[in-house]
Length: 414
Image 1 (cartoon, rainbow, N blue to C red):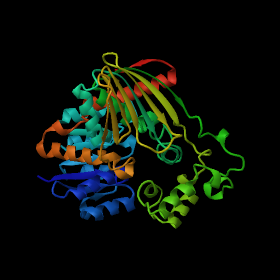
Image 2 (image 1 turned 180 degrees about the horizontal axis):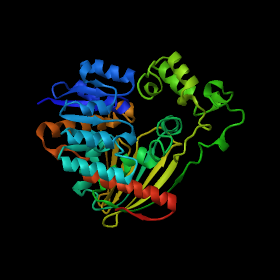
Image 3 (image 1 turned 90 degrees about the horizontal axis):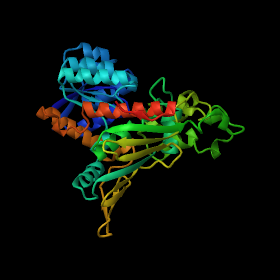
Image 4 (image 1 turned 90 degrees about the vertical axis):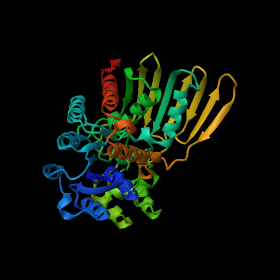
């Protein structure tokens, strides 16, 4: 059976999932697209041979048409997941919804309740669960090789330029226009920790703030835009160095493709002259945190910490898991497993596709699409690792952690 997909949102994430479909024509096809940006809409339609009558400029137009596909990929902006997902679930579409589900607890609960009532297959794009690295680590933890898990610590080094791109200049810079940082970026990680530990998170506390990317830290002589700035050559957050440098190096996908449809050095410079990505990082309207720590208590008294840092190398996550019989240290590709009885340490390396979104989250994008397509073809959710109830549970843990940060409290997840 060939599974057919409608893609709502032809940006970076929708485009990535559609590329998997194109690479697996014996299993799946994209047969409809809804996207307000004409360039991205047309590009995806051409790439998949979608006829004009199935190309829409809004999700509402697609939803008004008769059901066009087996499943829909909802990859619209964060605040625009709930309405299209509920509408399409009511028409019988199976749903793959980009994270986060919604920027509020109430809307997350509403979405999950609606898709469960509709009885459609549903998966959240928590792609970290689907990485080969994660699957190996999960097998080792579940096997009891390091005994019972006592504690875990997990680091997400966002990367200095990635943080500036997405969370200072970009679409996720403001909590009122997208969502707060922990939800926008790191709900992946809170969800991943719950998956690895295998128990729900019951209590959380959190600390963090917007420390560096503020007007008072602006260097003397800095201009509002990098193209006009006398101190730009010495600034680690230079948009000119970042985007033009990537084009010169032959990198034409994400993140350069986000700032301009004309992926040339001239196109980049034009975008930096007029668009949001050319602004000084100390003169933007950003308000999300640039570092945060979350302390967690899982069911059974297992403890965990999560740390997100924007001022870091752009690298894969680092995780340490402490058990009663052993210890695991992992970096996204390599696992070091120490046995407390024998004193021996084993090194395992996982074949990985890379560390960033352009490389498919280390195989997570492909793993997610493979699992969801398998589930739809079989009419069986067994292959889905990120279903509605557990995904809602981990979203609620993220909201509780943000409440704890703002209130200075310990919050119960409920």
